[in-house]
Length: 173
Length: 437
Ligand SMILES: Cc1cc2nc3c(=O)[nH]c(=O)nc-3n(C[C@H](O)[C@H](O)[C@H](O)COP(=O)(O)O)c2cc1C
Ligand code: SF4
Ligand code: FES
Image 1 (tube, rainbow over the protein chains, first blue to last red):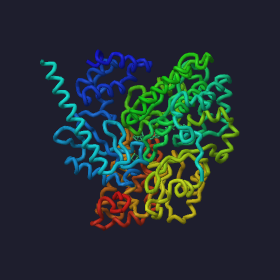
Image 2: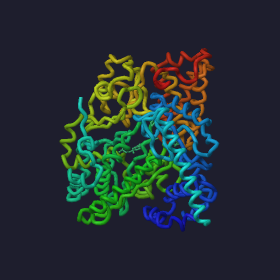
Image 3: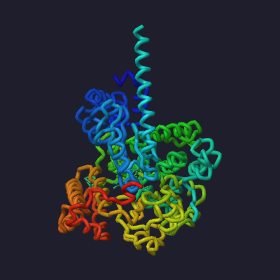
């Protein structure tokens, strides 16, 4: 349960606002962090926390594009292909990135690591081509740099996986 | 041509983002000075400076503050850091590199209207920046500049951040308030206006200002309104940050005195047009303002001073948020119209029929034109659809969406014509720039 696991953070969020309802967006962000996406469980728990109807929370989650109602890859890559970036080659970069990873627009690689989609302006137009990976900026990119980043992410994921295996082996022993 | 850093002080003082460095360089002195004055005096100073809102509309800031009824016990200042207009990236640089100047400016505004709290609304993608800003607010609190009894003055004010979740419409002030209240980010019917009881945040009188607007305030309090008016022109006082993007050699933010010419900005500062090519068009206010036709690098229109009044009178466009998207000779303006339309179609909140349906039809028809499947009458059709969206919607997004169509067709009819009956025209232009070299 979010309420127990993140009690201090949730208290801190509520302390900002005179109404519980104002906490719905930060709590949805928190829930997405916890569950990987905004699932039924997340909606229910946030609704209870904010004293809201679950359908209201659902409609908030549906309105804002950063809340994902489906699981994404471990690395959610959002490439800006809006005008200012497109004038500096962002469409081509986006296309090559999809080809390199072998995914369609909005799709996730078979290993579950990468989701690629295009988004509107991210306030980084002077650093195009650029993308956000899990909402962190990656800027002044080209495909060579991107391939290196992808390898680093793959290595990171593999290390986490073997680390997790070791950890679970330890607990068993 | 030189930049002038009232706001981007990190260019002169590295690490000004840290509280101690900021304070060592006069930081928070303006707040202390303001706290020693009557709130109305502070409002009068800002009024006298002619500071105008940097969020796009250019509304006089001091006048906006004076609308707040002083008698109400609860009032708010809301900082607009939604920054989602295509081509706009100036506020991000402020919160990343000189965050205390924003916090200080917001607190001066808060004191002037006797607000009980400041909320800084950041677009959701400024996730890392919001965490950093929280840390800066805590630094200021430790220094006695935020919270109870600020600088020993007896004035109390909290500063909070609030993070959005991806919706351009939340930059519109009434949608922003809805979003902050935990509702769908859709604009409100006005009146009541945010300054009025019943119209602001949680129904309380509220001032909403852009990040850049508020970051100007400490300088004005310290140096006085006359010094501020000496920079720029009578109607456009101070510096302005220009976000220069697109087909220039050095895309970046440039803070310059208002009145700097377009040519100085694009050629002296931004290094000229990419690859030594010729300029074809300029969008001075991101995707939402009318496009300016420029016939190459010798066009005298490039000598237009960048002020609210000159851009309006001499180019027929608007200064707006000063997001200068530069477009070179290789770019097909039909493609530009299509890109911008996709943005507004995606960002329409769906509340008004003309905006929701209009952007849908514009996008669909532009796609057909781009594929070479349209008749000449389709171009007239979209111009008509766009005209019918103007002035009939709840918020300005409806007009913003109509602008690119009306002005691209008016200023570049030949680009649209080139697609008529040309079944083989590629869907995306094979221009050097757009193809990405
Ligand atoms: C669709 C739409 C989007 C807007 N987006 C922003 C924005 O991202 N940032 C901003 O400061 N103002 C934005 N504005 C303008 C705000 O509504 C408001 O006028 C501004 O924040 C007021 O601050 P100022 O007086 O300091 O300029 C937007 C307006 C509209 C209609
Ligand atoms: S004009 Fe468009 S964005 Fe604005 S309220 Fe109407 S539908 Fe929403
Ligand atoms: S257009 Fe891509 S970040 Fe602005």
